[in-house]
Amino acid sequence: MKITGPHKPQQRQEAILDLVREHKKISVERLSVLTASSRETIRRDLAVLANHGLLKKYHGGAMSTDEPVEHDFRQRRMQHAAEKQRIARLAASLFKAGDSLLIDTGTTTLALAQELARKQHLTIITNSLAIAQLIGRGDRSNKVFLIGGEYLADASESVGGLAITQIQQFNTTDVVLTVGAIDENGVMDFSLAEADIAKAMIAQARRLTVLVDASKFGATALFRVCGLENIHRLVVNHPPDDTLSHALQRANVELHIAD
Image (cartoon, rainbow, N blue to C red; front, top):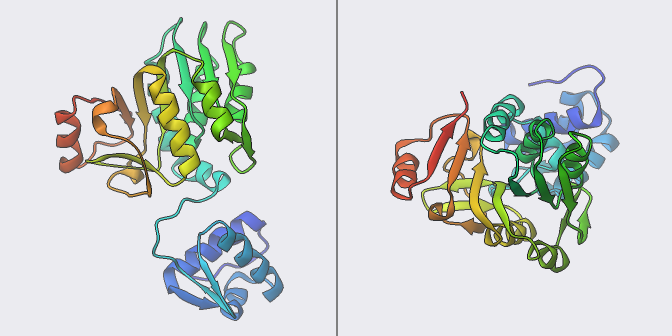
């Protein structure tokens, strides 16, 4: 694979990631040739990608990492965008006027916020600045509470003990989460801070709705959020495989497929 012509840093970094995954181990010089970029530019990009845990640097090049990692928020917004939008539209139809929703930070819940902003008389509590802004710019009958705490700029979210203390002040009809992975044992996340926020939200709501695209089926992440038995509704873009389907049935999870 060779990438030619001028391109933006984000596009170039995605191309670099693809090349590293393809070759497993590749030199700065080779990346420079294949992306038509200077060696100094490649070194800067590798530093950024390594800081996000997306690859491993070594002197003179980079190699792939076998550990499961999560891309940064901007990259994740672009991944499976159409599928996430379909999931969001279906999920939004499950909520009605008078419902109160705790919503965590994620690219799929951000798509959901765009749909919920058109609805009326909802109460939204979120640790996502972007979600709060979207709902706030929507129908004026909706009420928004923005959770504070330690601010993480990548995803524009609040986490930590202060955020959890504020979440514990609410008693809602619903919580809506997007997660990093799901299998027959439950749902998981890549971030301990985000998993802790999700657990706190689950504890304060009567119903749990999880939004997940098919790329998360059978995947794994380090931090457990909850078991399938805690989920009331799972909204997906594709039917899960037999193993996960049977586990969901045993846990009495309501499955909604946005096709």
